Length: 356
Ligand SMILES: NC(=O)c1ccc[n+]([C@@H]2O[C@H](COP(=O)([O-])OP(=O)(O)OC[C@H]3O[C@@H](n4cnc5c(N)ncnc54)[C@H](O)[C@@H]3O)[C@@H](O)[C@H]2O)c1
Image (cartoon, rainbow, N blue to C red; front, top):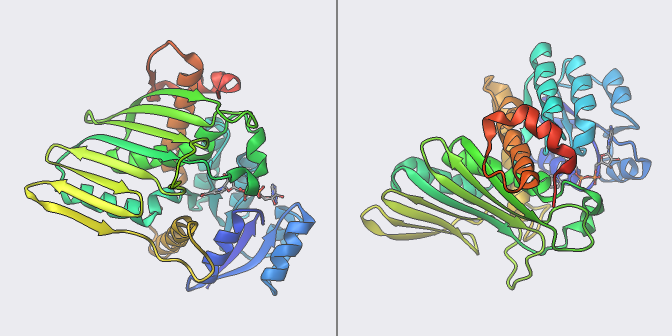
């Protein structure tokens, strides 16, 4: 039985905690939060789980196999380093870090301590995206040449996450990070990034509409576009709509969880790829809830078999490089393409000027 400590009992931690509750061989024994009201709320929902006002106290008192960190990015480095120093394995929420320097330091700290590290990058674990990946891997489309990855909606995400209103780096950090990871997952590593951002909703401090073009190794091009200010009916939130074209056919994830595959010399195939609704969840959030269960099962499977998680800290550095390259490209305007490989220094220096 793996003994788990969870850091952060806010908006998204509910999904982690409910998902752990349904996974075999794990037991959440402790939670911590700096906010006493949130700690109380978790204690009420999970009686018997020990609550701590900070991670240091939890790590000093508990014998934990791993710690699941569900706090915002600025707190990640200190927490990951503390957990690794205590000898426990680490899951860390996305976005992994506010800078590549922090991200690399966390990967190095876990490597030094000899503990596994996974970033809780759950979009690529969404059932429709896993099904699409199987189509790509089947070879039916031939080598991918083009993809469009779209996540445009006007769902009021600020109601549950009011802190997003103040973020000067908003949409790329919050959801772009997921979509850039999906682009890597489906088409392989990206070599160049071109990005333009807009601020549409006057209430937000950062960019809330973004268009990114990636050139992938092997020549495929993807367009990754997302917005929190796209008013339309019906609103597809939280579905990611994807089109992938290959040399021999096209696959599309369409609204309503339809996966359509055409070409390849066989009749058009349309399948329902809607994920199940967890007993503790509900529509339309089940897409996300189910992916949280799937990534957390993946982590346990990796711990048991000694495999590296698909979204390990080292893997996620490549996604974060694209995130910072996108901000650099948007803030540079006019200087055409930003090379993903030239990120390290350029993106760090351009950070303050990013956003819309
Ligand atoms: N994967 C997804 O689909 C998804 C969705 C929403 C949020 N998230 C991510 O989850 C993370 C948390 O988001 P949220 O909306 O739950 O935020 P939140 O502010 O609601 O919750 C974070 C909690 O962490 C606590 N906290 C902060 N620093 C701490 C520390 N050092 N020790 C102990 N507790 C600490 C805060 O008091 C707060 O209660 C963010 O990085 C966010 O981007 C992911």
